[in-house]
Length: 260
Image 1 (cartoon, rainbow, N blue to C red):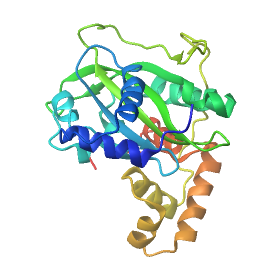
Image 2: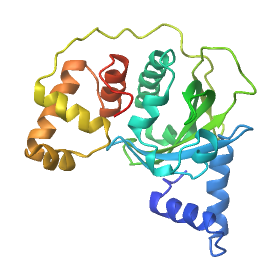
Image 3: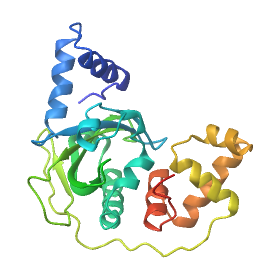
Image 4: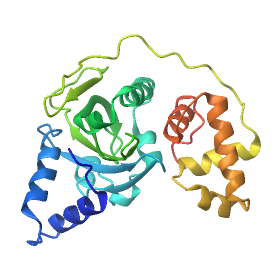
């Protein structure tokens, strides 16, 4: 399957929202098929995640109907992490580690042939919690299999499941085998307390807010090279591989203010 071009996908989404009629039929069918593969029955919203920058680039307006937020623009990484139920954060982080490992071991041609699926509780704008099914597929990667962008669908399944806990599954698409309930055997993370320097903490705070290295450099009045150095050091200290893992770990260790 060819790599789906994000710009073309984004254009189609915007045109669909505007009820435009000039959409290439064959491309729309392909995109709709990919989305249909990961939908469950219920109210949902979806968002585009840029892996390298660890940023949510686009969120559907239906997030307002599901979570009650006023604008889709407020749905950032930090916002998502801040509304996950505290009891669900540990396995959310654990699952994300397992997802990263699973795709790391896949051959490049199979990267776009799997979706991940698990559920957790999130807090709505009115303070109540709902259970959402988190489903994710890759929509853009390079020839070496490096993931560039993914699309995640969050479906309200509160009416289907009331119990706590979740299982992680990798669902094969296009004839690939599926792997259900692969969450056995917890990943143990070291307990780390106050290992960051004062400047590293400042950089971390800005990363959690979704700022890029260039933006952080401007905010803290330091060079981008210095910011990148701090980011590299924090990854090394926490034994994490990506900014997403670093942010998730900081949430798990209560380094994140839920009301920034």
